[in-house]
Image (cartoon, rainbow, N blue to C red; front, side):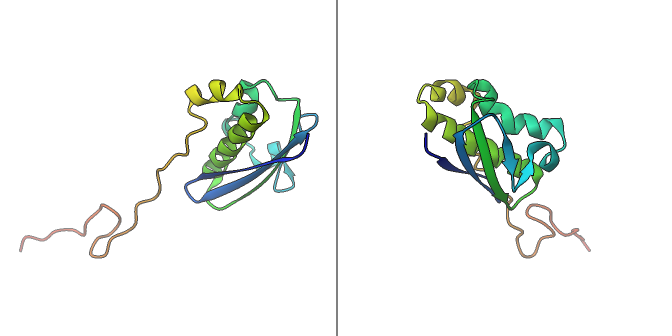
Length: 128
Protein backbone atom coordinates (compact mmCIF):
# COMPACT_ATOMS: atom_id res chain seq x y z
CA UNK A 1 0.00 0.00 0.00
CA UNK A 2 1.29 3.45 -0.91
CA UNK A 3 1.17 6.49 1.35
CA UNK A 4 -2.23 8.20 1.57
CA UNK A 5 -2.10 12.00 1.92
CA UNK A 6 -5.12 13.96 3.20
CA UNK A 7 -5.72 17.49 4.51
CA UNK A 8 -8.03 18.60 7.32
CA UNK A 9 -8.83 22.11 8.54
CA UNK A 10 -10.51 23.60 11.62
CA UNK A 11 -10.63 27.36 12.38
CA UNK A 12 -7.12 28.45 11.30
CA UNK A 13 -5.42 25.08 11.90
CA UNK A 14 -4.31 22.99 8.91
CA UNK A 15 -3.30 19.33 9.28
CA UNK A 16 -1.59 17.22 6.60
CA UNK A 17 -1.81 13.50 7.34
CA UNK A 18 0.30 10.76 5.74
CA UNK A 19 -1.04 7.24 6.39
CA UNK A 20 1.01 4.14 5.57
CA UNK A 21 0.96 0.45 6.49
CA UNK A 22 2.57 -0.08 9.90
CA UNK A 23 2.14 -0.88 13.58
CA UNK A 24 0.13 2.06 14.97
CA UNK A 25 2.76 4.77 15.52
CA UNK A 26 1.40 8.33 15.45
CA UNK A 27 3.89 11.20 15.10
CA UNK A 28 2.84 14.86 15.04
CA UNK A 29 5.47 17.40 13.87
CA UNK A 30 8.15 14.73 14.54
CA UNK A 31 6.97 14.30 18.15
CA UNK A 32 5.05 11.42 19.70
CA UNK A 33 1.27 11.83 20.15
CA UNK A 34 1.51 11.77 23.97
CA UNK A 35 4.19 14.49 23.92
CA UNK A 36 2.40 16.82 21.47
CA UNK A 37 -1.08 16.37 23.03
CA UNK A 38 -0.57 15.65 26.76
CA UNK A 39 -4.30 15.71 27.66
CA UNK A 40 -6.43 12.58 27.28
CA UNK A 41 -9.27 14.53 25.63
CA UNK A 42 -7.13 15.70 22.71
CA UNK A 43 -5.54 12.24 22.32
CA UNK A 44 -9.05 10.74 22.18
CA UNK A 45 -10.05 13.22 19.43
CA UNK A 46 -7.02 12.29 17.33
CA UNK A 47 -7.54 8.53 17.81
CA UNK A 48 -11.33 8.60 17.26
CA UNK A 49 -11.34 7.75 13.50
CA UNK A 50 -8.83 4.92 14.02
CA UNK A 51 -10.75 3.47 16.98
CA UNK A 52 -14.14 3.60 15.24
CA UNK A 53 -12.81 1.88 12.10
CA UNK A 54 -10.73 -0.58 14.21
CA UNK A 55 -7.46 0.35 12.46
CA UNK A 56 -5.53 1.42 15.59
CA UNK A 57 -2.60 -1.00 15.11
CA UNK A 58 -2.75 -1.30 11.31
CA UNK A 59 -1.35 2.03 10.13
CA UNK A 60 1.52 4.39 10.88
CA UNK A 61 0.42 8.02 10.78
CA UNK A 62 2.76 10.97 10.20
CA UNK A 63 1.17 14.39 10.69
CA UNK A 64 2.25 17.96 9.93
CA UNK A 65 0.03 20.52 11.63
CA UNK A 66 0.29 24.31 11.97
CA UNK A 67 -1.86 27.30 12.86
CA UNK A 68 -4.62 27.74 15.44
CA UNK A 69 -4.62 26.38 18.98
CA UNK A 70 -4.28 22.84 20.29
CA UNK A 71 -8.01 22.01 20.14
CA UNK A 72 -8.32 23.32 16.58
CA UNK A 73 -5.24 21.32 15.59
CA UNK A 74 -6.61 18.12 17.17
CA UNK A 75 -9.93 18.52 15.33
CA UNK A 76 -8.14 19.28 12.03
CA UNK A 77 -6.13 16.06 12.47
CA UNK A 78 -9.35 14.14 13.23
CA UNK A 79 -10.96 15.35 9.97
CA UNK A 80 -7.87 14.51 7.88
CA UNK A 81 -7.60 11.03 9.46
CA UNK A 82 -11.30 10.39 8.83
CA UNK A 83 -10.85 11.30 5.17
CA UNK A 84 -7.83 8.98 4.95
CA UNK A 85 -9.76 6.08 6.53
CA UNK A 86 -12.48 6.54 3.87
CA UNK A 87 -9.87 6.24 1.14
CA UNK A 88 -8.45 3.07 2.75
CA UNK A 89 -11.89 1.40 2.69
CA UNK A 90 -15.17 2.85 1.39
CA UNK A 91 -17.06 0.90 4.10
CA UNK A 92 -15.49 3.20 6.71
CA UNK A 93 -17.59 6.08 5.35
CA UNK A 94 -20.74 4.38 6.70
CA UNK A 95 -19.14 4.26 10.17
CA UNK A 96 -17.67 7.80 10.25
CA UNK A 97 -20.47 9.79 8.57
CA UNK A 98 -23.12 9.24 11.32
CA UNK A 99 -20.53 10.31 13.94
CA UNK A 100 -20.09 13.62 12.08
CA UNK A 101 -16.36 13.08 11.54
CA UNK A 102 -16.44 13.80 7.79
CA UNK A 103 -18.00 17.25 8.11
CA UNK A 104 -15.74 20.33 8.02
CA UNK A 105 -16.83 22.58 10.90
CA UNK A 106 -17.48 25.94 9.16
CA UNK A 107 -17.41 28.09 12.31
CA UNK A 108 -14.72 30.77 12.18
CA UNK A 109 -13.92 33.77 14.38
CA UNK A 110 -16.14 36.71 13.48
CA UNK A 111 -14.21 39.83 12.50
CA UNK A 112 -14.05 42.91 14.71
CA UNK A 113 -16.08 45.82 13.35
CA UNK A 114 -14.92 49.45 13.47
CA UNK A 115 -16.82 51.65 15.89
CA UNK A 116 -17.21 48.67 18.25
CA UNK A 117 -15.07 47.08 20.96
CA UNK A 118 -15.24 43.54 19.51
CA UNK A 119 -17.24 41.62 16.89
CA UNK A 120 -20.57 42.07 18.71
CA UNK A 121 -19.74 44.14 21.81
CA UNK A 122 -20.38 47.88 21.55
CA UNK A 123 -18.70 50.79 23.30
CA UNK A 124 -20.55 51.99 26.40
CA UNK A 125 -23.54 54.15 25.43
CA UNK A 126 -23.96 57.48 27.18
CA UNK A 127 -27.39 59.04 26.89
CA UNK A 128 -26.18 62.51 28.00
